[in-house]
Amino acid sequence: MKQIKYAIIGQGRSGADIHAKYLTTDKDRFKMIAVADPLQERLNHAKKTYNYDDSVMLYTDYHDIFKHKDLDLIINASMSHQHYPIGMEILQNGFNVLIEKPLANKVQEVDNLIAAAKKTGKVFAVFQQSRFAPYYIQIKKVIDSGVLGRIIKITIAFSGFSRRWDWQTIDALNAGGLRNTGPHPLDQALRFLDYEGMPEVVCHMDCANALGGGDDFCQLIMKAPGRPVLEVEVSSCNPYSPFLYLVQGSCGGLKATTNRADWKYFIPSEAPVITLSEKPIARDDGGPAYCGEQLPWKEESWDLPPEHADLFITISSRFYSMLYNTLTEGMPLEVTPEQVRQQIAVTEECHRQHKARVAGKPAFFVLPAVYGNKIAAGRIKSAKVKKAVKKNSGKPVFKKADKKNSQTKKASKKSRYKVRK
Ligand SMILES: NC(=O)c1ccc[n+]([C@@H]2O[C@H](COP(=O)([O-])OP(=O)(O)OC[C@H]3O[C@@H](n4cnc5c(N)ncnc54)[C@H](O)[C@@H]3O)[C@@H](O)[C@H]2O)c1
Image (cartoon, rainbow, N blue to C red; front, side):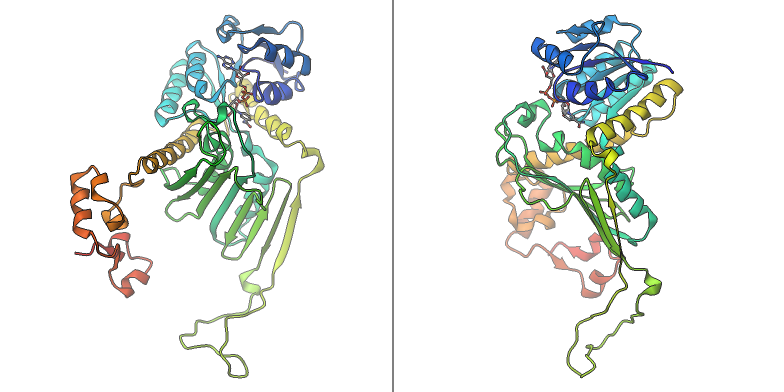
């Protein structure tokens, strides 16, 4: 069995407590050659905790790692703002690279990394290990089976209550809740959205208790044509987060935590036949009625198998199996840089909207009718938009084109709402 010779940059919670912790248990397939961290105490602590062999080199400057020309993989688990520059350096020095999330700050950086990997012919992978989470795989299985019918909305809430005071609250270090935690639910959400283009994104962020000023509340809604609404919450202000997943479908729904999923659905052919009534409906005794029926619900559930109780080890192991196959047999990556590029595009758009709001500017470049008289024309730079807002000032924001039109599915946004003249 080929052993992948690897080095890790960064010996923090990720570099030591996720990557080294897993890889030192998989010595048949992975051989540690070196680790780097500017903090000597981190190197010493990791060596002691995970029993690094005496042959493993400990460096305070990650550039020393590049001296090991026979490395098969360098893992970049440095701080978030270093992922792009150090990742680029690794590729340019001719090594395969695995970069921690968040991969980058901007789509342009992802494009540069993709181009560098293409140019050097090296493997460029991103550590989005939540793709292999048992609960996610189970939820996907239920949705793909079709029992829930057409999926209307998927809500994913990676939320809890906590205060933070570390560097991962500082926006300039490519941190904040959406970039720290967001890559996990976002990666999953984008798989459910299953849309290659840029989805519509509406995002609201806030900072309640994060000392660095980055977001610790983020509410994000994504939509694409013919796809369900995807709602992602990444919040540190939610002490009562009852679920991780909530799925709504035309034939039922699902709720899930990392350990358990419950879903209920009815089979349309087994349900009572219903017909549309254009007249008020009545009970048997003639009194007014509400639509009431007994649906033949079927209920199912799933529990996390005990052997997967350590979620981090389970998903790290599955991720590294995928990467091992890519490095040894050239198998395609299941988590592609192009998929992560879409995630970064969404994150970048969320931050653009947030910055615009903080600056008191409209978050969207939309028809002035959408904001209408609620926005002071003086805040809007575009002369065309200013003129339209001024014209609409003091008048209702929307004018419905006509009732009939607004109720047909075919009615476009343009025909449903007209700027009041
Ligand atoms: N995928 C996941 O589930 C997961 C979990 C935790 C953290 N992360 C990510 O891992 C990254 C690191 O986070 P963390 O929680 O380990 O942070 P941390 O603060 O615990 O560790 C970061 C480490 O990087 C080191 N470092 C700084 N500059 C360096 C340099 N030039 N060369 C080498 N090392 C350097 C620091 O000294 C520190 O030890 C973050 O981007 C975070 O988002 C991912």
